[in-house]
Every structure is written in structure tokens, then in C-alpha cells.
Image 1 (spheres, rainbow, N blue to C red):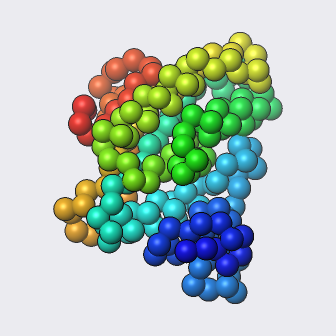
Image 2: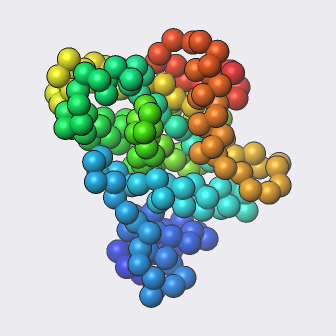
Image 3: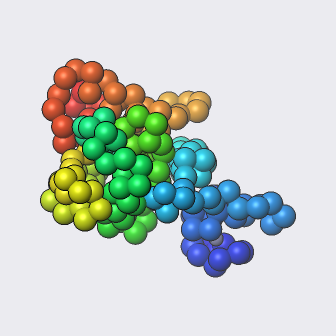
Length: 202
Ligand SMILES: [Zn+2]
């Protein structure tokens, strides 16, 4: 299927174009594609819509799907050390590093930075094992990146929570929430930074 607006490839049965955010069934509505001003990534609204859409498609077509929630380690110090302007620069650089760490078909979005900054990565056609591999690869890639924008935060690490669609389960599955809770639960158990948490390991 080709998007009527931007002519990008749209997955079969998708309601929204993952490239431009236009509804494929109603051409009169505005695109839900909204970019987060700080990171220039998809914002939380769009990411939630894409995750919901991909989960529905995964269940209907019996295809694997995983979601990662990425949290910056030691972020409470980062806020304190950097202030808003430097922090925003660092988040933008981190966003680019995350995009480079994943496949072209994966979608990276920015969720929030009320507490520690959180990013989301949507991994189509990826099962639980693949999600752990992707999470580990992402962590290694971030840990070895020299960040120019961050002052003394030239090196940083992230921890990742993973969730995978359960094709046997009926009803709505909120993979973002599952990945987030898995991350929080792993954190609460007192493990150190730079970890991957997933239902296979936790
Ligand atoms: Zn489009």
C-alpha cells in the first residue's frame, strides 16, 4: 500500500502513514504526525498511535512486534548539571544516536522528560529474542557514543525495557505501558545502569 499523501510505503491494514502521519481512510483530517520540538523525533501522541496500530496489525496478521522504552541513566544529575539549554542539545544528539542505532523500519519517538528522559522504539517483525538483541545493540551504541552537546556528560548510558505482543492473548495490549513497567520493575530491584529488562529475564 502506498500513502496517498507522501507516497511512502504503508503497511497493509495500517490506518496512519508511519512516514507523514496522514490518515489513510480520511483525507480531510490533519496528519497526527507531530514532531517533538526538542528532539525532532515523533512525539508521544504519534508514538502511542503507531504502537496501537502496529499491535492491532500484529494480532490480526499473526506477526511479531516489540516495543522498547529507553531511559537515560542517572538523569537526576544530568538535569542538575546541564540546565535546560544544554540538556535539550544533549537530548537532540541522543535522539539522533538512537535513530542511527536501529533499523530503517523501526520508529523512534520521544515520550517525556518530566523525570528521566524516555524514548520509545517500535520494532515491527521482531519477537522477544530480537527485542533483547535490539535493546542490547542500542545500549552498546549509546554507551560508546561521544556526545558533543553534553559538557561533562560526554558519555552516558541508557537502560531499556522491552515488551512483545502476545499473539495468544485477546483484547487490548498496551506495549508501551508494558515496556515501561518492566523497566520500572527492573530498576526497583536495584540493578545498575546500562541494562536491558524484558519479561524473559525479569
Ligand atoms: Zn505518508
